[in-house]
Image (tube, rainbow, N blue to C red):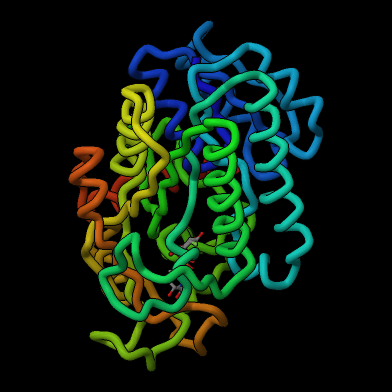
Length: 331
Ligand code: UFG
């Protein structure tokens, strides 16, 4: 059995779904503070008796200690707050939830002798890049609390390996995009802050004005450049990371991105192409804390995990759009 914290959220639910597709038993542990019951219901109807849901909170040590008595093969740890802007305004909330929550999880693993964990880390641990593409050896100087919490957890994981033999694979995501190919589940944040869902939402004409943050960056067209990695490609790296640990792999960390950069304007134009709609946008001031350009050097994951991302930005936008249409009927 695989144990997925945060499995009711965007990335965790896609990972749980893929594990179910591959025939595994999956337990999702989630406090439903940002994840959705509806998502768990969909996973349940897909996985049947192989899917189990525990409503629990990583900030309550008893919740996680009791849940891990079932001794899963490995943990895949997604549960976290993940809004960069909010993390700077409310650092206490982020340090408590992300760092203390992860520490409670690691302590429960130690207590219950669970020794493998795949962790959802982020490109935000690198901070403002001094060279692009960014490799795993790039200096780590996070410029926001979100990135700092993820880096602290990575450091704690190193110490828990040295002292207690808990092996971790830390996957440092760039910009995750898209949805399940069959639109069973997809990206569903409230409030939504991410570029692609915001562009797509604006096509439904529900009192939402799309804004593009900044036109004077030192990039190809003045808007920020990001490396958009498809959710299903991203999930495939988690399965490979589990295999890596099960085959005796040592603690390690990998960037997950495509090595291709797209500007905000390019993303907007691709959304116009996919939706066949003339999407209007207001070009406004920069958003605080946005680096100009984030592109992954993904060669380490390719070499060691044998991972190859296959989907394009357009593929991600297509599935995101299909999901967004479905979501409009749910919310
Ligand atoms: N943007 C807009 N308008 C919007 C939303 C975003 O112009 O309505 C711009 C942003 O300013 C940025 C780009 O689109 O230039 C991408 O922004 P997102 O909010 O989609 O994503 P971020 O790059 O800010 O953050 C994402 C994840 C973080 C992670 C980071 C690592 O959400 O959790 O990638 O690179 F830390």
